[in-house]
Image (cartoon, rainbow, N blue to C red; front, side, top):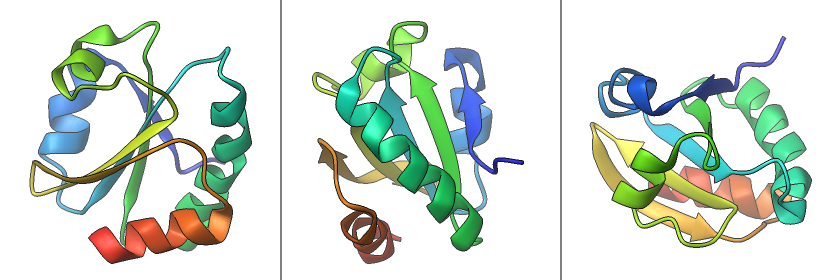
Amino acid sequence: MSKVIHIDDDQFESEVLNSDKPVLVDFWAKWCGPCKMVGPYIEELADEMENVKFVKVDIDENQENATKYGVMSIPNMIIFKSGNLVNRQVGALSKPDLKAFIENNI
């Protein structure tokens, strides 16, 4: 079972901003090729990294927070810590690079 949580705009505050551990939010869409490439890496890292919460937000169905956080291109992965935006990565990464991005920002 996946440890990645799919949320909507209504759940963003409780699942991301009020999380007791750092959160990687993957803003994505079903039609996005690079998003499909990164998706499996996010699933694998969610299993490997117990100290981080992994959340996915479909921007086609949930535009409020995508707009609020300036998501103009996807995949757009944003790390939140204690309710604050720490850093973002726009575009696909390899699994090792994605892991390093997360580790360097939590």
